[in-house]
Length: 91
Image (tube, rainbow, N blue to C red; front, side, top):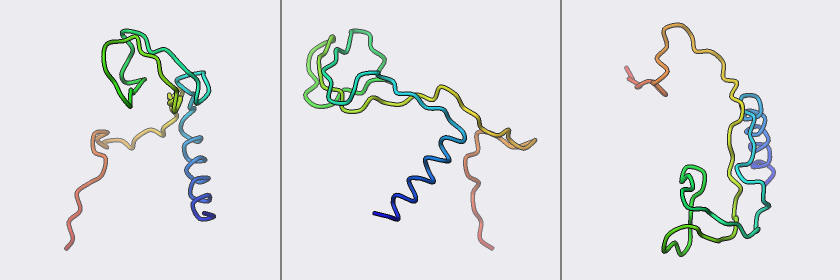
């Protein structure tokens, strides 16, 4: 448990350095909420017994997160931003 707390603290600091996060929903977890017709599925994931058409009523399990500010360092000149990790070749 102690090791996990140290890792989580490091992750929290790294995220805070580059991102300002805010909850997507203002209601507290466990609150009953309405999901309207035309909701954005990128913002709300329906789970459980999903049947019929919106509007839906359910219990908020997690409020979700949105990055309201992103402060990533600039890429070095000539680096392709679409390359996440290079291929490795062992010689």
